[in-house]
Image (cartoon, rainbow, N blue to C red; front, side, top):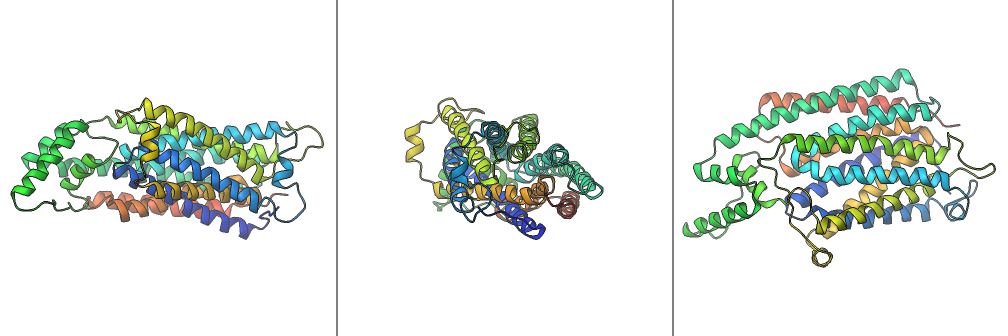
Length: 404
């Protein structure tokens, strides 16, 4: 099998992982904003997420010689380590599933900031001690401090941007105000959209002009079109989901660390430790199984007042399926690269990929128009938040050690 052994190779793995893990949430958010049910999207995503793990295991896990390869380890008595890997997959699946609802409530950028910061503060600390302190503490923990500052700035950005949006909505025409007051009901918002279409036809235009990003009309259009309705909902719902997701994310990397390095000596004498590719395969299998169980349940018993669906409706829904498949591949390969880098340079340093909000914020601004026409205060806070994340990823990568 192929192993990343150099510090430089580990950093390359982390950088690619950073890009992949920061991009797939933007794709999932795009589909939700286009009105595709999150249950349908996540089921598609789960298929290719598992496929990515299988591809990695059957390629990198079978190259070369030395330690046992992927197929050899499938028949070994290494179930204690497999259970740690599968536990990591379970908490990651819960975290990913939660964030797709949190993105709608608190936005892509802020959700990623809070969850990533919690992952670093809790997960990186656990990994540092599990890795027998191979990372440089005098460099590592100042990086953790940068993440803490960034999460405070992220919360301030969210608060400032929410105030900006409330100010924009106050400036709506009376017709649009009626929509925003009752847009929490999907049935009414659909009727409002239809009545707006009738008005456009009366004016001689069959297709309404698309609202510009950052305007009040854009916010109303987005609410009418998206699958998860958020107007009139308490912000505590979104923040609670976000913090739950962050706590789940903080545990998956330490669990994977235990699976591959057996720090608690759970394997029988003479049984080799799980290689990263075998651990990642079982990690992804548990992630897939839980995702299928929960999302099939949510088809028939949806949460947050989403419309009821069915397996038949899911199978017939090809709108955006290719994008959902792409999101699954990006997440799968991103996680795999993070673990490959972590095995070489230490999982605490590999948590530098939690600077993925840098990428997510870029896509959020470019694709979704987040923070368009916001106040000067919001822009200053946003710039400071991104600066702290850049500092954090650099410091965590600089703390990389070398596993003996």
